[in-house]
Image (tube, rainbow, N blue to C red):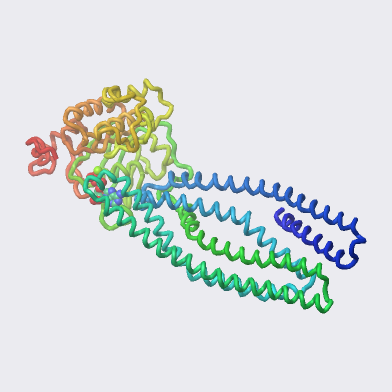
Length: 557
Ligand SMILES: Nc1ncnc2c1ncn2[C@@H]1O[C@H](COP(=O)(O)OP(=O)(O)O)[C@@H](O)[C@H]1O
Ligand SMILES: [Mg+2]
């Protein structure tokens, strides 16, 4: 289609050649023929524009589809990549990677269809035509063409490392900006506005230096390019004059050849500019592709188990785990068994590995050695998205979406009715404070739930977990942000939801876990004590007994 379009572009100049040749040979006598030729030119131009219209419509369709598909697939990729990946990469970097990637790929494809492909075709067609009309003209062209492209390649090759650095810094810069904005509270409270600005500026400085360098080089090169092109054009013209002078060709041919060889030289110039641009886009495109190639570390088995009823029995067999393949083990030889429907608690100093256990139960990470079992089968054998639905967690930091309170509670169960949402909120002791908000359940909570207090966010998180109707419910220090009164309410809530499901409570304050069936004391990634509250509090010199004593004397932590 494009080739056809480029071909008919040549009709009009060719008709012009015939007109000139007719005029110079037989004068006015052929007026009628001339008029027909002019009409032919008009028709050719019109036909060309119709073909152009059809082609462009096709191209636009393709481009729009690509523009739609790329970000959607990037979002999907991000959603399904394991937590491990997301913890390694910074938010701003990831977003920039996607945005710049999509932008440059779309640009490249647009250029490809609108510019590069037509220009290439034009170049090929004109060179063949030139050769066909009079091979002597094409000589000039073939002389300059290789020099030109070799130089373009060289310049871009030299700029490659600069461009790489530039794009890396771009991602870094947006990562930096995202960090300072996300933590704006800390920035302003500790009066670090200037420093954050300076650090950001520092990264942009590197970008600026590289960018100026690259563009200066490219600009300087434009001069050289112009010179080569002009020499080519002049050579063609001089050769034409010489041929006409010696009667070896007609003036019409000269005009035709000069018109299309102008076009050919101009195409050459444009192509080399596109090459610059392609080189410029290659880096962000490669970064985007590297994201597309990223594989989730946690593999979902092809035909994973999808049992109708998950009972909720959890077992760790000699589990060891280190974050990101590191040396320091967050868990080391951990074994325990939690029967379905029972209540287990993990306590111990911060950094002991309690949250890590919760993450392994979710299979956000796989253990380095040992096994994690759910209802007697290894977690690796389950369909990832199936068994995770049977678990709900109230994490240390409840993640709140910028939406209404009710949407946040119903996040795991979008179909829930308002009365179901209210019921969950009542169990979580959140109903009262929600009713006191400006618009009750319809109140917008702001980004990350900024308009709620820490304790309120936690209770929204508890209501969300309850509404998900899980078989296993995990509270990860769910009462750490609460005053003693709210803590008591939460404890009641926990009692209420403990029936017919396995409950795992990770707690700092021992008062929360008094009634647990089993208590595991975790320190330095190892279980050092286990038993019921009564058993553990009577162990002389035991960590649990010591912690209990400290907390009873009023020192809560
Ligand atoms: N995402 C992570 N990447 C690397 N190390 C981590 C990560 N999360 C926790 N750790 C490390 O693992 C250890 C156990 O952490 P964690 O399970 O969160 O402890 P706890 O919940 O008992 O306070 C700590 O030493 C901590 O520094
Ligand atoms: Mg923790």
